Length: 179
Image 1: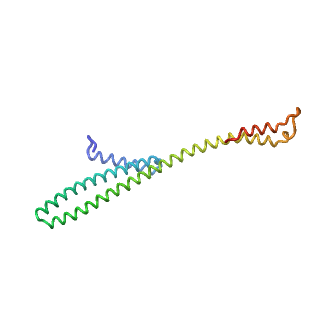
Image 2: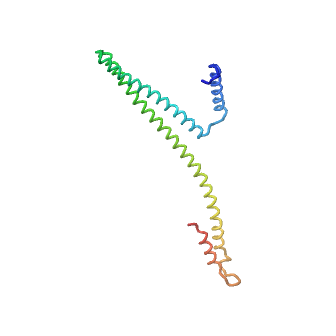
Image 3: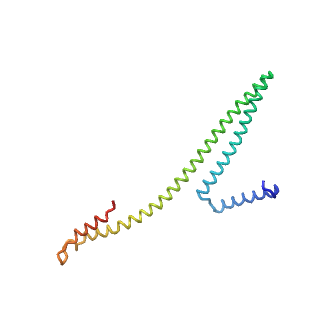
């Protein structure tokens, strides 16, 4: 409850928020995957807290039942002690189920977090791939230019001064190799 607001004002504020969410969903304002994962994790954590509260209440009830069973047994009320014992068994089973549900919810939360990490890594790798492609292009352009020059008919003959350019070009090509 919000202080200073009546129950009617709170209900209308909740209805307005729901209407906004519906309008956003209908007319295209989509949440990003990161926002959705954040919202899902928030909901899971809230559910886990509620389960913890329920489990704590059941554990308190279990302790109370134990004392009540002992008291009934001391007083000789065996029928009521048997009924309370059955209730105690049911309560313990519910507590086990609460622990199990909590672990399942935490596992789902971990999977969501893993998905988010994988998506983030894929996004980073996408950028790295682009950069590596650009770098590869810059490295292969001079190499292909040098290869084209190596096979040109001019290099097969000697220059006017009698110098052969072919060994010089091979040396340049070796220096361009990426190791």
